[in-house]
Figure 1 (tube, rainbow over the protein chains, first blue to last red):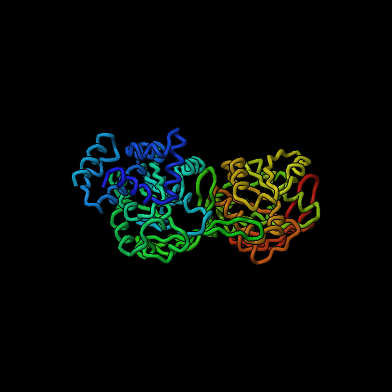
Figure 2: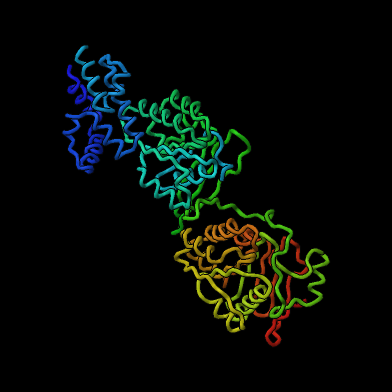
Length: 97
Length: 392
């Protein structure tokens, strides 16, 4: 499984009401929701900016819980959405599984 | 207010009943750092509410959570934030959003060791959270004959004696205030006002008879926290004697005058007495804000005269009359209140609201009720020049 594919599955698992809020907030910031699929770390960035750091942490926890089902290390997963570097490490980790 | 919120308090009730305002106000009194966790309210709206209650926003850490289906992760996230913030008080608004199991209720109770106020919808009153809570408060909003009442009922207390069963409360820009029911036990010994006797005079033998049974009275006056009901006949003489009494008190102390219609100022002006009357139309007396504003204008007066309560009685019923009087006495507990009713019979439901009740006829004044035990029941009233003389 590819990391991008995993992220996409996680994102859709959030449910339509929550995704609608996130996508609205991204658009309000002048961004585009599709941008998040290219750069997944932007998800936490936008959520943190628009909805507070506590909600960014909540989304991150949901991500860690989601990928745990795929036997992905929690530490690697917890950093994946925080920065491009974290995402790169996560993608490598997933590729090597 | 703090007395109601002990340990883990669960506040529940229908939307709009004032649960969040009550919790925010109590939390601000209980500590310097309040962590507010909301599962339905947005941060912006909450900040607006905090400011609207006259509270200091810098005291509050507001965490408005997104609604997620994974409630276990949501709880984990809230606990993480709680550990990071280490607040003095926690408010969990919308506890219905958290897992509704016995285990979840028990773990929330054990984790939040600082005073915690949890807020939930009506059905949470029968949940596991209600079972573990130290204090259970049911909040409701009642509309009766066009007047609105907010009520808090103490359903359960575990950490000390119950502060009472049921109270009304009010929400305004001055905060949240409990409206305490008045009783005669709240009357102090201190005399807050005595009339000058320039316009209405008690004859010497009347004063002597009174001071014989109540030696602390040098002359008839009003004691702190007392309530006097005056039932005035429709005859102009009755209104005149009532306003003359008011002016006699005004000679000695500051008197706040609250009226449902503009009459007192005019009547007093004819007697050369300048009254600053705060007029609140009866139609506005069904809402708390009108009373709040009126009392703000009246300020810290040791005596408050209220005119036009018969209008409140006709429009909203006897409950609202009691509420208005309790409202005034909750804001000004040390003041004496004199409430006038025009053209109304002093029925038992009204009598019980006062420690002393007078009835004015054109030619006499009758003591209908007296906690002090007035030695006279009926006094003759004679007009001599600009004065009324009250004699046996």
